[in-house]
Each structure stands twice: as C-alpha cells, then as structure tokens.
Image: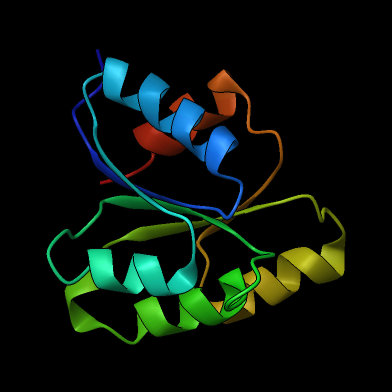
Amino acid sequence: MTQTKKILLVDDQADAIDALAMLLEMDGHAVRTAYSGADALAIVDNFVPDLALIDVSMPDMSGMQLAQLLRSNPALAATRLVALTGFAGQADRQAATEAGFDAHVTKPVSADQLATLIAQTN
C-alpha cells in the first residue's frame, strides 16, 4: 500500500471529482474536494495537501489562476500541483508549467496515472 497522502481535488464537475475522491479515500488518503477556485482557496487555509489535482477550465477562476495563487502561499511550497485537463497540446503543457503546475495530465486520469502521481509525491 502506498503511503497515505493529503489530496485536494478541484473541479467544477462535481460527479467526476466526487467519484475520484471516493476511490482515493478507499485507498486510505485524506481527500478534500472543491468545486471552484474560491472553494479551494478556503480549504487550504486549514488543509495543506501533499498533492492537488486541479481542473484547468473552471468558471470562477481558471486552474492556471488558482495554481498561481497556491504557489504564492509559502505554506503550500511542497504541494505538488497537477493540471487536470482536456487540453493536451504542447502550448497547454507549457502554459501549465508557467502557471506553477508540476505535472500535466489529460482527462480522464487513469488509475495507473493516478497511482504514479501519488507515488511521485513527497
């Protein structure tokens, strides 16, 4: 079994993110879900995740904007940020890197990809 991680999932598609949260919790991880960038910012006041999977396209603020705000918080310096998106082009990957993401994963994330992301997280 992998080491338990604190994971933040941010996506405006509630059904998808809730299902992913349930799977991660069944693996023993501490998971918080946010359905908007504003919700995510409120959560990290009291929950410092090891890993955050963030949808890039959300209505209140983009995942890119959220990543920049999270990166500006010293308490989150060690948090691994992963862009979770339907956009897979090189320009999209470069924009994610410039916004502060550590990795870029195209939706839907597979179980193997998720396990690898968790294993690579300190």
